[in-house]
Figure 1: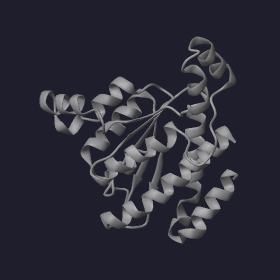
Figure 2: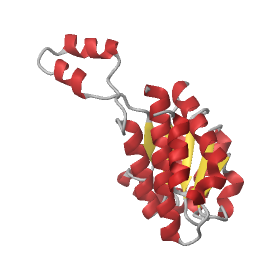
Figure 3: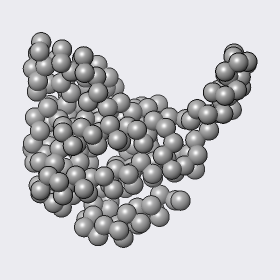
Figure 4: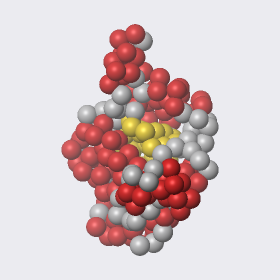
Length: 212
């Protein structure tokens, strides 16, 4: 399915997202550009948004709805290297789009919180992982999560593109986001209910454009 079809399907199902049409398209364009230039996507959030960050990475790092066979050269190399397992790996493994959830490294997160500050658990990881040309996606229903804001500040300083997924006001995050996807709800549960179809559509569009 072409990216425009996926976007229109999203907007037809969720009319409340119509004001974000251009912002969603821009986010998809930037993410595709990052992957095609060899960059990666970092994602962070708290609570339910922490789960959403992990969910986004899961859709990017393996096939979502499309078919992503390994490149032929890698398939051949695997088969050549390991007669026992290579053929199976070549057939079963899928191309991944490099994405990292900053929420899952428990030893690192607790070390940062204990040794530095709990507010910089994501910012410190952006220092280590982030490179110019990468993207940071920060999720916060209020737009005011300090650890997400600090990560966005560091990302901007290091030359990353920043995408924010928030509620209606955008909160303090809006000042640090190149692209703001502020769904038009304020209640936490309702914001998160709209974030999911947005990032699902984004991941589908990126997959469709890159892998066909």
